[in-house]
Amino acid sequence: MDVVLLDFDGTITRRDTTRDLLKALLGQRPWLVFRILPLVLAIVVSREGERIQQAKNTCVGLLLKGLNEKRLDLALTDYARLVQPLLRPELIQRIEDKVNQRCLVLVVTASFDGAVRVALRDAPVTVIGTRYVQKAGCFTGAVDGPGCYGHHKPQRIRQATIDLGNDLRFAEAWSDAVSDLPMMKMAERRVWVYRDQQPAAFRQADPDGEYLKLA
Image (tube, rainbow, N blue to C red):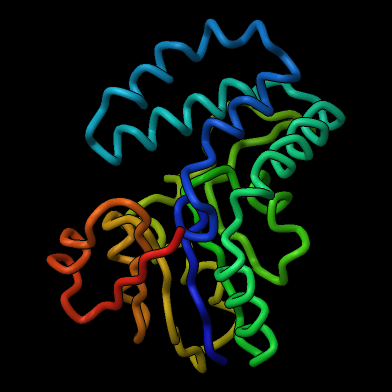
């Protein structure tokens, strides 16, 4: 079976959607904005990818903590509405084409997996992302495991496909971030997506990759 790997934020979407998730979650409990402000500042000023992702994870965890199922559903529905105009039609069509070719399409994201599943609920994909601990049906706010960023992505992919046997071919992978190089290296064809920035960093990290400018 051929497998296609896609990043979500900045790849399937035109930009990072963390702000949309935070906005949607804060819509249920606006007073929590004061608790996440230091983390939002860290996200804005930091230049280190791993640190930025940790701040994002903590921020989302704080907003998920204690949220009941009804409010979570409302927040994620709102998130999906905000994200819908950001989906790249070229990538959605690519997903549909690959599924029609009987490929398994995995969306591998550092974002909250539950949110991305709702945003892509009409797409025939399997979402692998950052999980959060739940006890008695409520989120504790803690990340479940090491997350799904950078070098953790290949591990999560292998865990998700272990029951499919060894007859898997990672045919292609798509991403907009050099931090995804460990995942991209799993695939035979590697497509680096960019919008405004120059692809020099991609060329340096992966000289044999492809570089595609999208709006």
